[in-house]
Amino acid sequence: MQNPWLELSTESERYVLEMDRDAILRFNARVNPTCRVVVESIPEPFIGNPESARVVLLLLNPGHDDSDHESHRVKTFKRALIQNLHHQPQDYPFYPLNPLFESTGSAKWWLPRTRDLLQETKLDRATLANRLLAIEWFPYHSKSSALPRQPFCKSQDYTFQIAREMLRTKLVVAMRSVNHWAEADTRFLKVPRLTNPRSCYISKGNMAPGLFDDIVRTLRD
Image (tube, rainbow, N blue to C red; front, side, top):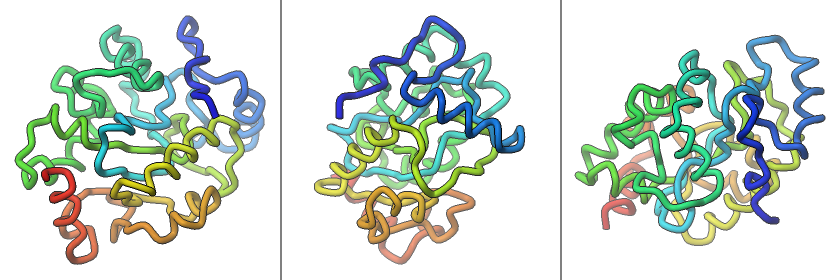
């Protein structure tokens, strides 16, 4: 499948692929307001460079922070988001680690959860940003999640295609919602996962013995 995110219009302030539009409208009509897809935020089906990444993190969908409405319209951050969707090169492919974007909701969520990785690998942020990839089961933002296990947007096929490819050569770790991922491919049930997916901290205390060390070694060596 070709990258559908090349077709995302960036001219308006409603960021929905045409192939997903009807499904999103139907979903938003039947869930409570906190679970509705926030179409005013730029989708983040993945963050990072699939080619240079060594460790891949699987999640459910990007959350919505009250600051997103403003930060997604800052030219430099918006450019990073779009370049990411297009798989275009940038100094910080995993852009939450970019010091320029520390005030964004994305960075505020990811920096605490990757702090132990930075400390233990002793990598600088730019290097880690080239070696880390996050993939969301569902690409659009919401404050809370009421997502069914069955995929319902066409663009998810592209996400699953990338994730399946990562299984072949990368260290893949499920941060949350492994049962959702299993609906895309049962092989995802076999990947290592966090002990407490509600916290999503990538730390030694939130993993089976030895997994954190494996992640550190994979990122560093």
